Image (cartoon, rainbow, N blue to C red):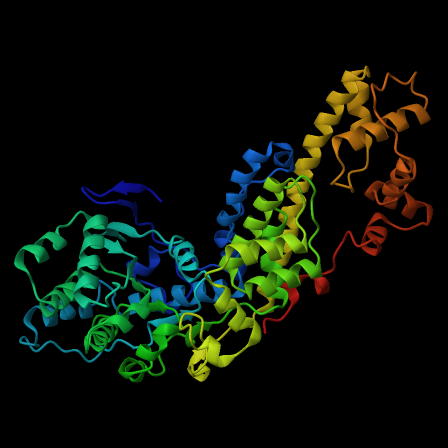
Amino acid sequence: MKKIIIPNGSMAEEAQYKEQVIPDYQDNPFIEALPNLLSPHKVVEKLAFYPQYHQNERKLDSHYRIYMVDRLFQVFQPLPMNIELERKISRALRQGYVFRNPFESKLAQGFCRDYYGTNPVNLKDDDGFYPSSFGFTLIGISGLGKTSSLKRILNMYPQVIVHSEYRGIPFSAYQVVWVKLECPHDGSIKGLLYEFFSEIDRLLGTNYYQKMMKTRATADAMMTVMNQVVRNCSLGLLVIDEIQHLSMAKSGGSEKMLNFFVNLVNNVGVPVILVGTPKAVKVLQGDFRQARRGSGLGGDMVCDRIQKDEVWDLLVSSIWHYQWTRKETPFTPEISSILYEETQGIPDLLKKVYAIAQAYAISSGKEEITPYIIRKAAKENLKLVQPMLTALKTGNIREIAKYEDICMTGIDFDDFLTRTKESINLDLRAKEIKKRQNKMKQENLMEEKKEAVVKLVDLGMDAKKAQKIIDTMPSQNQDVSAEGMVEDAMALFKDEGMKEEPEKKGIRKVKGRKEKQSTANLLDIRTVVEQGKKDNKSAYEVLKESGYIISFKDDIFSREVV
């Protein structure tokens, strides 16, 4: 999309309209200007983020590597919860625009109703009903990654789209696709309204905030203006984070704000997503819950801490290979269990414990991540949350209930969507990780090969000969070091009698290298094909028998979605 700078505002994108497969979404410029619908596979690709990492970084001095550990916090691993959240946001956004097509009369009728407060011109409004199922609520314990997930999903959409012409018809409009606000700490509806006007001013270069401050408008007057602004800027989605702050609102304040959200959904048609911790449940299960019974496209979302299952192992494996200690520690079931015990399935604590354990191992000179170091890092650096973790470990409901941000007891799960059952997404992600790790290892191998060639040349070997020997070495063992390749090359050079062995300059031979080389050769794809020819088998037959070719029935895309 072409970028456009709005005067005194933010960067926007010029509308590009896309053909829609779903009939409900056709002939609507607000929907056609949105990015295309994505498959779960594409969603995972767009959400995932893995910063660059190279094994050579482990050879740097300790004071550099300790700073590199902070890179762990950049990793974003999509989980089934994130894929379900993206789908619900995508559906809510588009369904909200279905009933606000700018080329239909309902939008103009809404402006008149807000302006006059009644229906003075007797506008027919038979089709003016906005389903209350646009919005939904996302409840999850602290540290689960609700806010970071929302940010990554929302950033998949341009925040502002500029329209000028639609199918030859002049159409000048700003479309604000989404706005994310944070509920004020005191639950003040006026504070939330000021934040909304300030955000619209930042995006579109308007001065609503200044006008509201000058006129000292009441909350009721500001809410009326907000309805008009929402329609004027074609707001697609309103996200209110930290909704648990409503519990701090003064008498009647929380009910007034929740009723205001209901008004936005029912009368304006803007989907509202409320995000908070379990502490917000007491507020949401009051009058607002009754007003929105049956709401949510597929139900609201309640996300508890991650259980110790395949999802947990997927999350840990996504960050585990980011190691800056001298000695690499393999990921084992024991490590997985210890990390779960010390973090109780909370992703934010997982990254912190892993990062602290690495920093301790590097600074202490131990240069290895051990169960002892993980437990020590958790005990000494998570002192403030230890009472909460202890309550979760013991499963004592009375103790857990003391901490409202993690207490999931007393929530009626029948009204909430607790978790997705799309196992295909988990399998997809696991294969993505394996593919990415193999690619990274292959890049590391190429670097090690270059280094090995340089070392052989330094030992007196001809450069072309050294390059030829290193290139012909099997590459199945991608974790081999440059020193190991040099030793193998020296042994191969001598055994094949190419010429007199060059001076080794202190290089130590390791017994068993030749045997290891022979074993690796058996795994070479060329060796497999050659052996198949001797057995009168085609290349396809032997490669399929060896597992190099996967049939359709074994492919993950052939599986049924649960």
